[in-house]
Length: 615
Image 1: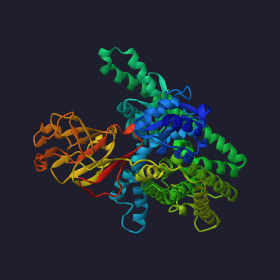
Image 2: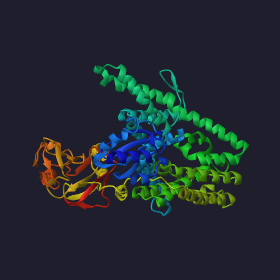
Image 3: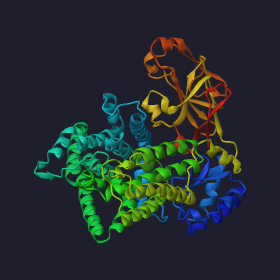
Image 4: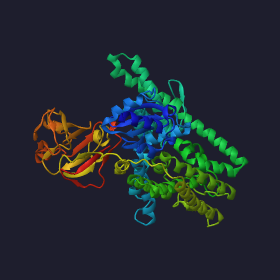
């Protein structure tokens, strides 16, 4: 009866059949796809007997019910004819929001590289100013392409992340990105002579730092691969399919998809210049507001003939002034997020991105890592940019030199002496910071809780204790990302942590059973009583030792208790043989849980210390 009563109360609290699209469950949660999550009172759901907490993730509404979830699910499905198949959410989402979700999802893994490149550019501004580095030195020249590389090769990096999102062979997608950036093609673009392939004309355009063309191309590759997979015989597939996919995709990229951005940019350029002739203040307001989206698509290069020749004789009154308002707005929005956010990682990323945008005019880390991802800060920056752009259009702000607009490059608005033009540019910079910061703070951010705060949130909401993974060995704890093996550092095998061992005994991190033990004894798989599947991989490439230095104390199928010895390892011998002894500890079925959270601020762990929380 308790299952029926709880199921009925949940059914009513989430809006009944009118609001429920699908209902399914995993190990601990009832997972609902709702037409409108906003009409559900989370506190009311948490108060229902049997409910341990609620979480919102990946467009679904998760109700945490514990190990008895299957019984609750059976009672729940009797209340309505719910599909268990996931369907697209019918929450109000326009094309722009969908595009933002796709772009931010593909761009998020790139943020460390973009942030690193942006901060190198900041150093290249600061170090010459304080006399530490000469702009004519080879060090300066080399560091310049250090800073440029993450941005120029963005299409290649995006090809990889987009391939994962769209289910395309990653290296084929990366190869297509390489085609669009190949030095020989870049030379053809620079030469300007007509180029064709199989008689089809190729539009000469530069795709460095572009985003949209490669995303569209990788999406199309999903269908290209499926087509050739269907028609090529299995016996020839390994040989012919990569050839066919690369050839057709490369042609489509250069002949069809890539030029779309060029043509769109040319159309935008013509439209804005026409508006500028009729109402200059409006054109500048629109450009300042839309600049983040224009830069994102790479269409700002359509205006290159205007801003690249900016000088005292031919000042730019459109693009560079618009970028001044837009760039500083992105920086201010990122700093506001840094101060308002609770998540420590977000605070750090947003702060670094804000500094990069404000001082160097490099907005990609702020745009892709913060404002675009959380949307409301982007809206704040666009509103501020539009208002400042109108002010510049009315006062006639001009740029007399080509430089990426930022606080440091404000002198580009000086023509011989400090006059009204420079003062107005400074007013715009200050106003952009103040207005954007205030709007971002007022709009707020819908922050995703992804650290140990998520565990505390569930516990405080009435949940039972999250599942703990104790340290299987004493040693120094490091993030999984620092493991020198991409299978673990990319987290493709699951979430977790790693430990650099200080003792030779590996013990069970929880009560459970031994589900796998490699013949070489270098790795062991365990399954907890709650269904958590854990891989303890002792060392990197230690499979090559064929069991030397390893002794197993258990067998597959054995029941083990937390702290029970599983393996003994001669780590001194492993090290002497030239192998890394780091031990990745990975929850291989991470996707079946709400989150896998490493314990914060742990430098070393002993056998009884919890190193992971699984909820």
